[in-house]
Image (tube, rainbow, N blue to C red; front, top):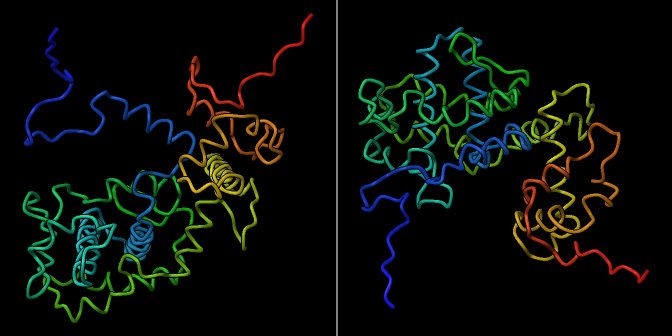
Length: 309
């Protein structure tokens, strides 16, 4: 018997079709789960340098009372400069800067910054979106409290950008006033490039993400509910690595092994439900891995055999 298979019905044929990566419309539920369990964390959190850059821009904008137009121009030009720094550094890294592919043609004999960040002809610039890649970082940044938006303009958030981080981006922000930037001038902002370590940035954002201050002290009353939830989730991940990280799996499987199956989610003293309001929410994570009614089981979930009556 011969069968012809047509499908999947939700996919359109052709290499020219560009659409979302969630054709089954599960992106919304997935992102809502992330927002609930890890507030402020997103798919671009790994690009932590952008978070500190936007905070530095917001600090500068607040100091000089920039309006929406000035903030938007600074964001676009700063993003171009960050991409240009990476492009000028050499071979493409594993994590390319945002917009680097579209920026290359503006970076030949020198960086044509005004053209690359042009707001009048967006389709011909490094990004077709008016606010560039800030659109992806804005929500998490405001939730984390590193940036605020007032009347459409960027302003400092509840976690003020440290002076050392502002100094890190000062040379880069000064270049945003130029329409054309020589490679010699570009190199003066090299410390702000992706991958260049900055201890002050690392310590500040690590404290923000983990809701701690003064070398790791957590005072629940000093933080918002979203901060405490994010901290609790990070504690779950840290505990999972402590318990199962030696098995050589990735973080996702390590977290699954410590949360989805077995008794550890309820018996481990560091993750078991307690009256303490800051105890890690292991149960919601187990529900994410094993939806209600799921038939998936693990060997450690099998109840012991009952004794004969």
